[in-house]
Image (tube, rainbow over all chains, first blue to last red):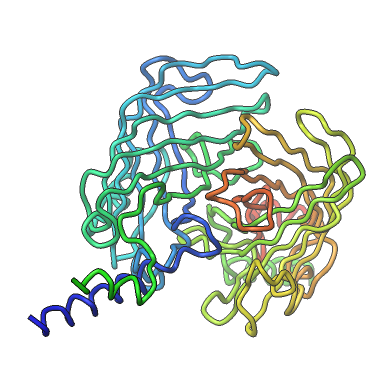
Length: 222
Length: 203
């Protein structure tokens, strides 16, 4: 029994070390870059148009345990169905999407390649290979577009499966957000509509919490 | 002699690297201090990440150096939607010595200034209370690597950033998280391709 408790203490302390790396008080995040396209192009975004993104991670909080020097993190967002554009004033537009999934893949092959005119031989294929790191279902995704055609987006997801759920957090909320540029002022591969830059984050209830050594010991003092 | 010169130029064009379709970007993730009112200045400290498989406009050694991007002295001129800023500098530093730490702003502007420039303009728009964007234009004017960019390619680089002001996104003491990029309109290449006919017309 004593050995078992020691093992549990060690495991608990390991969890503290792993999970106490929320840098600078922010949520643990993965910074990504990528490109997207919508059926029929964007803008306009007509009801029923489907939005797709393929992205690569460029930096990750240590809590995710990924070395981007050896492993590639790729993002594939699909089945986002446009509900159409709404003018919110000031010539700014809002577009809500329904449905949609985000998959993050960990892949030592480092073979991500956007190519041109997606879907193509490499996109989304090279962004959805390897080990499934995370899969989530969007609860919402909203895009805001300024009069020039650039803007920002924000969404939230429920986790469904993947390594993160087993190894980092099983009952967290997840957010997906960032900014995008259309063709003007961005080097966008031919056939893509948008360049995007943003963060994927663990948000809200984090199951593995930071605690003091005394707190950990008190869990096993009875 | 003229024919020899043309042949030499043609041979050079074949030998040197050929410009490729490429996505080039300085990608940054940082924290921003906003002015308290018109006449005040905006400051941003950020880390530049390796955008692979996209490229940086200039080759950078991410294995051995940290890169930071600092914006300073952007003055708020018009406090409307969008906010309009003028002036301001932007500098990219290369540093092998200290890790950037938002609690110690000096760690963002130590090392070698490899590129420095000025803003032509910067506008900041908030779509909601916590979600917005900043768009501007940069002219590179100095730094140890500015000579790696042809003079005609040093100006008019688009600057764009997403803005998030949620408390969970912002480091204590700062106002907003900026996640954005600055990039050239066309890929920066060491030399340019030209048709045989175009080479001949030079002479």
